[in-house]
Image 1: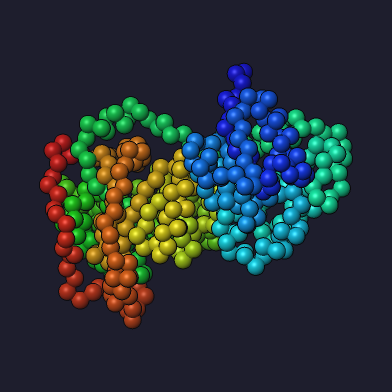
Image 2 (image 1 turned 90 degrees about the vertical axis):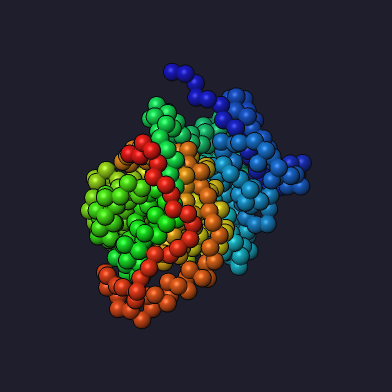
Length: 436
Protein backbone atom coordinates (compact mmCIF):
# COMPACT_ATOMS: atom_id res chain seq x y z
CA UNK A 1 0.00 0.00 0.00
CA UNK A 2 1.26 3.54 -0.74
CA UNK A 3 2.12 5.62 2.30
CA UNK A 4 -0.50 8.21 3.30
CA UNK A 5 0.20 11.70 2.05
CA UNK A 6 2.07 13.94 4.52
CA UNK A 7 -0.02 16.46 6.40
CA UNK A 8 0.44 20.14 7.19
CA UNK A 9 -0.05 20.60 10.92
CA UNK A 10 0.12 23.60 13.26
CA UNK A 11 0.93 22.75 16.88
CA UNK A 12 -0.06 25.59 19.22
CA UNK A 13 1.07 25.86 22.85
CA UNK A 14 -0.25 28.44 25.34
CA UNK A 15 3.30 29.05 26.64
CA UNK A 16 6.45 30.63 25.25
CA UNK A 17 8.50 28.00 23.50
CA UNK A 18 11.53 28.88 25.63
CA UNK A 19 9.61 28.18 28.86
CA UNK A 20 10.15 24.82 30.53
CA UNK A 21 6.59 23.61 30.95
CA UNK A 22 5.15 20.08 30.72
CA UNK A 23 2.78 21.18 27.92
CA UNK A 24 5.73 22.59 25.97
CA UNK A 25 7.58 19.32 26.33
CA UNK A 26 4.51 17.45 25.09
CA UNK A 27 4.12 19.76 22.06
CA UNK A 28 7.84 19.60 21.29
CA UNK A 29 8.16 15.83 21.46
CA UNK A 30 4.97 15.28 19.47
CA UNK A 31 6.07 17.79 16.82
CA UNK A 32 9.49 16.14 16.50
CA UNK A 33 7.95 12.72 15.97
CA UNK A 34 5.42 14.00 13.41
CA UNK A 35 8.17 15.86 11.53
CA UNK A 36 10.32 12.72 11.49
CA UNK A 37 7.45 10.99 9.64
CA UNK A 38 7.49 13.58 6.87
CA UNK A 39 4.67 15.82 8.03
CA UNK A 40 5.11 19.59 7.77
CA UNK A 41 4.78 20.87 11.33
CA UNK A 42 4.70 24.53 12.36
CA UNK A 43 4.97 25.32 16.06
CA UNK A 44 3.40 28.45 17.51
CA UNK A 45 3.81 29.61 21.10
CA UNK A 46 2.90 32.55 23.27
CA UNK A 47 4.35 35.94 22.21
CA UNK A 48 4.42 34.77 18.57
CA UNK A 49 2.07 35.87 15.75
CA UNK A 50 -0.82 33.44 15.40
CA UNK A 51 -3.23 34.95 12.87
CA UNK A 52 -0.70 35.50 10.09
CA UNK A 53 0.74 31.97 9.91
CA UNK A 54 -2.71 30.35 10.18
CA UNK A 55 -4.20 32.29 7.25
CA UNK A 56 -1.02 32.50 5.15
CA UNK A 57 -1.14 28.82 4.19
CA UNK A 58 -3.74 26.04 4.27
CA UNK A 59 -3.24 23.64 7.16
CA UNK A 60 -4.84 20.22 7.25
CA UNK A 61 -4.94 20.29 11.05
CA UNK A 62 -4.56 23.00 13.68
CA UNK A 63 -3.78 21.26 16.99
CA UNK A 64 -4.27 23.51 20.01
CA UNK A 65 -3.22 22.66 23.55
CA UNK A 66 -5.07 24.03 26.58
CA UNK A 67 -7.22 26.43 24.48
CA UNK A 68 -8.59 28.43 27.39
CA UNK A 69 -8.99 32.17 26.93
CA UNK A 70 -7.01 34.31 27.05
CA UNK A 71 -4.17 32.39 25.39
CA UNK A 72 -2.53 31.96 22.02
CA UNK A 73 -4.31 28.59 21.75
CA UNK A 74 -7.70 30.30 22.08
CA UNK A 75 -6.59 32.88 19.52
CA UNK A 76 -5.68 30.05 17.15
CA UNK A 77 -9.24 28.73 17.36
CA UNK A 78 -10.48 32.20 16.60
CA UNK A 79 -8.46 32.51 13.40
CA UNK A 80 -8.17 28.92 12.20
CA UNK A 81 -9.94 27.98 8.97
CA UNK A 82 -8.81 24.36 9.27
CA UNK A 83 -9.95 21.26 11.10
CA UNK A 84 -9.15 21.81 14.79
CA UNK A 85 -7.97 19.25 17.33
CA UNK A 86 -7.75 20.29 20.99
CA UNK A 87 -5.81 18.55 23.74
CA UNK A 88 -6.51 19.29 27.39
CA UNK A 89 -3.85 18.25 29.87
CA UNK A 90 -4.41 19.34 33.50
CA UNK A 91 -6.73 22.35 33.38
CA UNK A 92 -8.42 22.16 36.79
CA UNK A 93 -7.74 25.80 37.69
CA UNK A 94 -8.38 27.05 34.16
CA UNK A 95 -11.77 25.32 34.01
CA UNK A 96 -12.90 27.03 37.20
CA UNK A 97 -11.46 30.44 36.31
CA UNK A 98 -13.07 30.49 32.86
CA UNK A 99 -16.54 29.45 34.03
CA UNK A 100 -17.52 33.12 34.33
CA UNK A 101 -16.65 33.59 30.65
CA UNK A 102 -18.56 30.48 29.61
CA UNK A 103 -20.45 32.00 26.62
CA UNK A 104 -17.20 33.21 25.00
CA UNK A 105 -15.34 29.99 25.79
CA UNK A 106 -18.14 27.87 24.37
CA UNK A 107 -18.11 29.83 21.09
CA UNK A 108 -14.44 29.03 20.55
CA UNK A 109 -14.78 25.48 21.88
CA UNK A 110 -17.55 25.12 19.30
CA UNK A 111 -14.87 25.30 16.61
CA UNK A 112 -13.12 22.19 17.92
CA UNK A 113 -13.64 19.17 15.67
CA UNK A 114 -12.00 16.59 17.95
CA UNK A 115 -11.36 16.92 21.70
CA UNK A 116 -8.68 14.86 23.41
CA UNK A 117 -7.37 14.60 26.97
CA UNK A 118 -4.18 13.13 28.40
CA UNK A 119 -5.79 11.73 31.56
CA UNK A 120 -9.13 10.28 32.57
CA UNK A 121 -9.42 12.79 35.42
CA UNK A 122 -9.11 15.71 32.99
CA UNK A 123 -11.78 14.18 30.76
CA UNK A 124 -14.20 13.77 33.67
CA UNK A 125 -13.66 17.36 34.80
CA UNK A 126 -14.15 18.83 31.33
CA UNK A 127 -17.22 16.71 30.67
CA UNK A 128 -18.76 18.23 33.80
CA UNK A 129 -18.12 21.88 32.83
CA UNK A 130 -18.11 21.69 29.02
CA UNK A 131 -20.11 18.60 27.99
CA UNK A 132 -18.78 16.92 24.84
CA UNK A 133 -16.92 13.79 23.78
CA UNK A 134 -13.31 13.68 24.99
CA UNK A 135 -11.01 10.98 23.62
CA UNK A 136 -8.24 9.77 25.92
CA UNK A 137 -4.75 9.83 24.36
CA UNK A 138 -2.32 8.59 26.96
CA UNK A 139 1.04 10.41 27.06
CA UNK A 140 4.47 8.82 26.90
CA UNK A 141 5.70 6.99 29.97
CA UNK A 142 7.12 9.38 32.57
CA UNK A 143 5.46 12.53 31.22
CA UNK A 144 3.20 14.43 33.60
CA UNK A 145 1.09 17.55 33.32
CA UNK A 146 1.44 20.16 36.04
CA UNK A 147 0.69 18.62 39.41
CA UNK A 148 -0.32 15.25 37.95
CA UNK A 149 1.31 11.89 38.52
CA UNK A 150 3.69 10.76 35.76
CA UNK A 151 2.16 8.47 33.16
CA UNK A 152 2.91 4.81 33.76
CA UNK A 153 3.11 1.83 31.46
CA UNK A 154 5.45 1.34 28.53
CA UNK A 155 4.51 3.98 25.97
CA UNK A 156 6.85 6.19 23.93
CA UNK A 157 6.34 9.34 21.86
CA UNK A 158 5.99 7.30 18.67
CA UNK A 159 2.92 5.69 20.23
CA UNK A 160 1.55 9.13 21.11
CA UNK A 161 2.13 10.32 17.54
CA UNK A 162 0.38 7.18 16.25
CA UNK A 163 -2.69 8.03 18.33
CA UNK A 164 -2.86 11.64 17.18
CA UNK A 165 -2.18 10.80 13.56
CA UNK A 166 -5.15 8.43 13.72
CA UNK A 167 -7.29 11.29 15.08
CA UNK A 168 -6.08 13.58 12.29
CA UNK A 169 -6.72 11.02 9.53
CA UNK A 170 -10.17 10.24 10.89
CA UNK A 171 -11.12 13.92 10.77
CA UNK A 172 -9.71 14.42 7.28
CA UNK A 173 -11.69 11.44 6.02
CA UNK A 174 -14.89 13.28 6.94
CA UNK A 175 -14.25 16.11 4.49
CA UNK A 176 -16.38 16.00 1.36
CA UNK A 177 -14.81 15.17 -1.97
CA UNK A 178 -14.79 18.48 -3.89
CA UNK A 179 -14.28 16.75 -7.26
CA UNK A 180 -17.92 15.88 -7.89
CA UNK A 181 -18.71 14.95 -11.50
CA UNK A 182 -16.53 17.04 -13.85
CA UNK A 183 -18.13 15.58 -17.00
CA UNK A 184 -21.61 16.53 -15.85
CA UNK A 185 -20.43 20.03 -14.93
CA UNK A 186 -18.91 20.41 -18.39
CA UNK A 187 -22.32 19.57 -19.86
CA UNK A 188 -24.08 22.00 -17.55
CA UNK A 189 -21.65 24.76 -18.51
CA UNK A 190 -23.31 24.85 -21.93
CA UNK A 191 -26.68 25.68 -20.36
CA UNK A 192 -27.91 29.24 -19.68
CA UNK A 193 -27.34 30.83 -16.28
CA UNK A 194 -30.28 31.32 -13.95
CA UNK A 195 -30.68 32.83 -10.49
CA UNK A 196 -32.00 30.72 -7.63
CA UNK A 197 -33.37 31.44 -4.14
CA UNK A 198 -33.30 28.27 -2.01
CA UNK A 199 -35.24 29.19 1.14
CA UNK A 200 -38.72 30.76 1.35
CA UNK A 201 -42.21 30.25 2.73
CA UNK A 202 -45.85 30.51 1.68
CA UNK A 203 -49.08 30.69 3.65
CA UNK A 204 -48.87 26.91 4.02
CA UNK A 205 -46.35 27.68 6.78
CA UNK A 206 -47.84 28.61 10.12
CA UNK A 207 -45.79 31.82 10.35
CA UNK A 208 -46.30 33.17 6.82
CA UNK A 209 -49.24 34.78 5.00
CA UNK A 210 -47.91 34.95 1.42
CA UNK A 211 -50.17 33.11 -1.04
CA UNK A 212 -48.54 30.77 -3.55
CA UNK A 213 -49.60 32.83 -6.57
CA UNK A 214 -48.13 36.00 -5.02
CA UNK A 215 -44.84 34.24 -4.35
CA UNK A 216 -44.61 32.91 -7.90
CA UNK A 217 -45.41 36.26 -9.51
CA UNK A 218 -42.89 38.02 -7.28
CA UNK A 219 -40.22 35.45 -8.15
CA UNK A 220 -40.81 36.03 -11.87
CA UNK A 221 -40.83 39.79 -11.41
CA UNK A 222 -37.48 39.64 -9.64
CA UNK A 223 -35.84 37.58 -12.36
CA UNK A 224 -35.52 34.29 -10.51
CA UNK A 225 -35.26 31.20 -12.68
CA UNK A 226 -35.82 28.67 -9.88
CA UNK A 227 -37.00 28.74 -6.29
CA UNK A 228 -37.14 26.20 -3.48
CA UNK A 229 -40.32 26.51 -1.40
CA UNK A 230 -39.43 25.30 2.08
CA UNK A 231 -42.57 25.58 4.20
CA UNK A 232 -42.33 24.50 7.82
CA UNK A 233 -43.27 20.83 8.17
CA UNK A 234 -45.38 20.95 5.02
CA UNK A 235 -45.02 20.42 1.24
CA UNK A 236 -48.56 21.27 0.10
CA UNK A 237 -47.60 24.84 -0.85
CA UNK A 238 -44.54 23.67 -2.78
CA UNK A 239 -46.56 21.01 -4.62
CA UNK A 240 -49.22 23.57 -5.52
CA UNK A 241 -46.57 25.98 -6.77
CA UNK A 242 -44.79 23.27 -8.77
CA UNK A 243 -48.04 22.42 -10.52
CA UNK A 244 -48.60 26.04 -11.50
CA UNK A 245 -44.94 26.52 -12.53
CA UNK A 246 -45.11 23.47 -14.79
CA UNK A 247 -47.06 25.65 -17.21
CA UNK A 248 -44.42 28.40 -17.16
CA UNK A 249 -41.33 28.53 -19.33
CA UNK A 250 -39.26 30.82 -17.12
CA UNK A 251 -39.59 29.52 -13.54
CA UNK A 252 -39.17 26.13 -11.92
CA UNK A 253 -40.07 25.15 -8.38
CA UNK A 254 -38.04 22.79 -6.19
CA UNK A 255 -40.42 21.01 -3.84
CA UNK A 256 -38.87 21.22 -0.38
CA UNK A 257 -39.70 21.20 3.32
CA UNK A 258 -38.07 22.70 6.41
CA UNK A 259 -38.52 19.88 8.90
CA UNK A 260 -38.37 20.32 12.68
CA UNK A 261 -36.60 17.31 14.20
CA UNK A 262 -37.24 16.00 17.69
CA UNK A 263 -34.35 17.67 19.50
CA UNK A 264 -31.69 18.50 16.92
CA UNK A 265 -33.02 21.54 15.12
CA UNK A 266 -34.31 22.02 11.58
CA UNK A 267 -33.15 20.53 8.30
CA UNK A 268 -34.41 21.14 4.76
CA UNK A 269 -35.10 18.38 2.28
CA UNK A 270 -34.85 19.51 -1.35
CA UNK A 271 -36.49 17.69 -4.31
CA UNK A 272 -39.13 15.96 -2.21
CA UNK A 273 -42.25 14.18 -3.42
CA UNK A 274 -44.23 14.03 -0.19
CA UNK A 275 -44.36 15.45 3.32
CA UNK A 276 -41.93 14.28 6.00
CA UNK A 277 -43.44 14.34 9.51
CA UNK A 278 -41.86 16.56 12.13
CA UNK A 279 -40.58 15.16 15.41
CA UNK A 280 -38.30 12.46 14.02
CA UNK A 281 -34.66 12.30 15.00
CA UNK A 282 -32.19 14.01 12.71
CA UNK A 283 -30.98 10.63 11.43
CA UNK A 284 -34.55 9.51 10.71
CA UNK A 285 -35.35 12.78 8.95
CA UNK A 286 -32.26 12.52 6.75
CA UNK A 287 -33.15 8.90 5.94
CA UNK A 288 -36.64 10.03 4.90
CA UNK A 289 -35.13 12.70 2.61
CA UNK A 290 -32.85 10.11 1.02
CA UNK A 291 -35.73 7.68 0.50
CA UNK A 292 -37.36 10.29 -1.73
CA UNK A 293 -34.14 10.90 -3.67
CA UNK A 294 -33.79 14.33 -2.07
CA UNK A 295 -30.87 16.46 -0.97
CA UNK A 296 -30.02 17.45 2.62
CA UNK A 297 -29.72 21.21 3.12
CA UNK A 298 -28.92 22.60 6.59
CA UNK A 299 -30.36 26.14 7.05
CA UNK A 300 -29.00 28.89 9.35
CA UNK A 301 -26.74 26.31 11.06
CA UNK A 302 -25.18 28.52 13.75
CA UNK A 303 -28.00 31.00 14.41
CA UNK A 304 -28.71 30.64 18.12
CA UNK A 305 -32.01 32.46 17.63
CA UNK A 306 -33.30 29.71 15.32
CA UNK A 307 -33.86 26.04 16.02
CA UNK A 308 -30.55 24.67 14.80
CA UNK A 309 -28.48 21.56 15.43
CA UNK A 310 -25.75 22.30 17.96
CA UNK A 311 -22.13 21.80 16.94
CA UNK A 312 -21.93 18.24 18.24
CA UNK A 313 -25.07 17.20 16.34
CA UNK A 314 -23.82 18.91 13.20
CA UNK A 315 -20.56 16.99 13.46
CA UNK A 316 -22.58 13.78 13.78
CA UNK A 317 -24.17 14.31 10.35
CA UNK A 318 -21.40 16.13 8.47
CA UNK A 319 -21.03 13.36 5.87
CA UNK A 320 -24.77 13.48 5.13
CA UNK A 321 -25.03 17.22 4.48
CA UNK A 322 -25.22 18.04 0.76
CA UNK A 323 -25.49 21.82 1.14
CA UNK A 324 -24.90 24.22 4.02
CA UNK A 325 -26.58 27.62 4.18
CA UNK A 326 -23.72 30.09 4.52
CA UNK A 327 -25.82 33.23 4.17
CA UNK A 328 -29.31 33.96 5.45
CA UNK A 329 -30.39 37.63 5.61
CA UNK A 330 -32.78 36.93 8.51
CA UNK A 331 -29.88 35.93 10.74
CA UNK A 332 -29.55 38.72 13.29
CA UNK A 333 -25.78 38.53 13.84
CA UNK A 334 -23.23 38.46 11.00
CA UNK A 335 -21.04 36.18 13.09
CA UNK A 336 -23.53 33.33 12.70
CA UNK A 337 -23.24 33.46 8.91
CA UNK A 338 -19.45 33.69 9.22
CA UNK A 339 -19.39 30.53 11.32
CA UNK A 340 -21.34 28.75 8.58
CA UNK A 341 -18.82 29.89 5.95
CA UNK A 342 -15.98 28.61 8.13
CA UNK A 343 -17.64 25.22 8.72
CA UNK A 344 -18.53 24.69 5.05
CA UNK A 345 -14.99 25.56 4.03
CA UNK A 346 -13.14 23.21 6.32
CA UNK A 347 -15.41 20.23 5.60
CA UNK A 348 -15.64 21.15 1.88
CA UNK A 349 -19.44 21.18 1.94
CA UNK A 350 -21.15 22.91 -0.99
CA UNK A 351 -22.22 26.39 0.21
CA UNK A 352 -25.71 27.68 -0.49
CA UNK A 353 -27.93 30.61 0.45
CA UNK A 354 -31.56 31.61 0.66
CA UNK A 355 -33.64 34.63 1.59
CA UNK A 356 -35.70 32.67 4.17
CA UNK A 357 -38.44 35.03 3.04
CA UNK A 358 -41.70 35.01 5.02
CA UNK A 359 -43.01 38.04 3.10
CA UNK A 360 -42.90 38.64 -0.65
CA UNK A 361 -40.80 41.79 -0.15
CA UNK A 362 -37.84 39.71 1.05
CA UNK A 363 -37.81 37.28 -1.85
CA UNK A 364 -34.58 37.11 -3.83
CA UNK A 365 -32.61 39.30 -1.41
CA UNK A 366 -29.95 36.57 -1.61
CA UNK A 367 -29.56 34.26 -4.56
CA UNK A 368 -27.08 32.10 -6.40
CA UNK A 369 -26.33 32.22 -10.11
CA UNK A 370 -25.95 28.71 -11.50
CA UNK A 371 -26.32 26.85 -14.78
CA UNK A 372 -29.81 25.53 -15.51
CA UNK A 373 -30.48 22.02 -14.24
CA UNK A 374 -32.86 19.08 -14.29
CA UNK A 375 -33.22 17.13 -11.04
CA UNK A 376 -31.13 16.84 -7.88
CA UNK A 377 -27.93 15.41 -9.40
CA UNK A 378 -27.57 18.21 -11.94
CA UNK A 379 -28.57 20.81 -9.34
CA UNK A 380 -25.87 19.62 -6.92
CA UNK A 381 -23.19 19.79 -9.60
CA UNK A 382 -24.40 23.21 -10.74
CA UNK A 383 -24.13 24.46 -7.15
CA UNK A 384 -20.41 23.60 -7.03
CA UNK A 385 -19.77 26.56 -9.34
CA UNK A 386 -22.43 28.88 -7.90
CA UNK A 387 -21.89 32.61 -7.44
CA UNK A 388 -23.75 33.77 -4.33
CA UNK A 389 -24.94 37.38 -4.43
CA UNK A 390 -27.06 39.39 -2.05
CA UNK A 391 -29.02 42.60 -2.09
CA UNK A 392 -29.40 44.52 1.13
CA UNK A 393 -32.82 44.25 2.72
CA UNK A 394 -33.65 45.98 5.98
CA UNK A 395 -34.14 43.14 8.48
CA UNK A 396 -36.38 45.26 10.71
CA UNK A 397 -38.54 46.16 7.70
CA UNK A 398 -39.18 42.59 6.52
CA UNK A 399 -39.63 41.32 10.09
CA UNK A 400 -42.18 44.07 10.75
CA UNK A 401 -44.08 43.11 7.59
CA UNK A 402 -44.13 39.51 8.74
CA UNK A 403 -45.42 40.58 12.16
CA UNK A 404 -48.18 42.75 10.66
CA UNK A 405 -49.29 40.03 8.26
CA UNK A 406 -49.39 37.18 10.75
CA UNK A 407 -49.99 38.49 14.28
CA UNK A 408 -53.50 38.05 15.54
CA UNK A 409 -54.40 35.55 12.87
CA UNK A 410 -55.41 32.05 13.85
CA UNK A 411 -52.74 29.41 13.50
CA UNK A 412 -53.82 27.42 10.47
CA UNK A 413 -52.27 25.78 7.42
CA UNK A 414 -53.74 28.43 5.09
CA UNK A 415 -54.24 32.16 5.72
CA UNK A 416 -54.84 35.11 3.46
CA UNK A 417 -53.82 38.73 3.64
CA UNK A 418 -56.34 41.23 2.34
CA UNK A 419 -55.91 42.13 -1.34
CA UNK A 420 -52.63 40.19 -1.84
CA UNK A 421 -50.35 41.51 -4.58
CA UNK A 422 -46.91 40.58 -5.83
CA UNK A 423 -44.04 42.64 -4.45
CA UNK A 424 -42.65 44.72 -7.28
CA UNK A 425 -39.01 45.39 -7.78
CA UNK A 426 -36.14 44.10 -9.82
CA UNK A 427 -36.39 43.30 -13.51
CA UNK A 428 -38.34 40.49 -15.16
CA UNK A 429 -36.07 37.85 -16.64
CA UNK A 430 -36.39 37.08 -20.29
CA UNK A 431 -36.88 33.36 -21.06
CA UNK A 432 -33.52 31.86 -21.92
CA UNK A 433 -33.11 29.91 -25.12
CA UNK A 434 -32.46 26.21 -24.68
CA UNK A 435 -34.23 26.20 -21.30
CA UNK A 436 -34.73 22.74 -19.92
